[in-house]
Length: 395
Image (cartoon, rainbow, N blue to C red; front, side, top):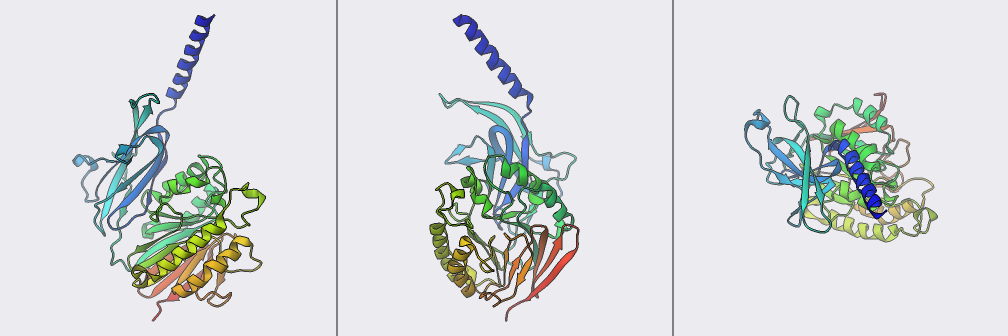
């Protein structure tokens, strides 16, 4: 009887292994770019099974990628090459104002829980031969003219993403901002990669950096704390951060949740009041920094508007904590979302000293920064221009 059961268990194990082997090791989320600066970039992608990962990169100089052997930049942490399904590689030593082509490669790997032994399997990679390789251009510190696009409140509607970018000339866009609520929740590991990231990566993300602001819906679900795994932050792993692109300074603020921490929807886990208080102190330090003060333009992204009518608790706290700081910051424009209705609030309309654009969930804000100022075209999913706004350079 024991022998029969052992044989049965072995047969089940072999059958399970065969079933797993039938699914070819593959990239399920194409590479997408994060934190692009003049000297470095972080590239992420996902596979359908655990493995190692690395990036091969070269100057976009017209030579075939196979012309010379490329250095392998591995996904590693603490001196150990990582094994997992989400792969993250930061490539340093790049030159400002230069274009690069690259490919990503993963090799399936199985780790033995009893020993340190690793068994390797098949490879999966982006293509090189007879295809146009993904490429990107590092910004120069002197860059004074560029364009970016803002989307928000997608809520996992992939068709909406494709529609919005049909009306956007990506060749003229330097980066894309996802200003919150890209999905409705993070209740499992597949929602963000499959509902948004793989589509965004296919449309623009392999060549145009994605700047992500967390919305209130991305604070929800059992995997909510994985948000910065997919969008690694330059601010000690926090979902609010700042960066400079050319001579323009950007603040990516975090709204937290919209209801009181005690609301039953959060199952006793919310602490967003304290979270926003800490963020407000960070904002104070940012606007006092020399890097901020020396910038020509100042632009902020915040999912929930800091002003409005009949405010919920989260918005009231943002109004109390953030608005006074932003009013002192001399912002040229702030982009928000959340309401699913387009609004434009002029300076001093609700106690705000700066213009606030509340982008609709079915519009894309294509923004151009030049010596003459900042211009914004709001375009809906049918390609109709909802509004054109121009903000002149302050004296």
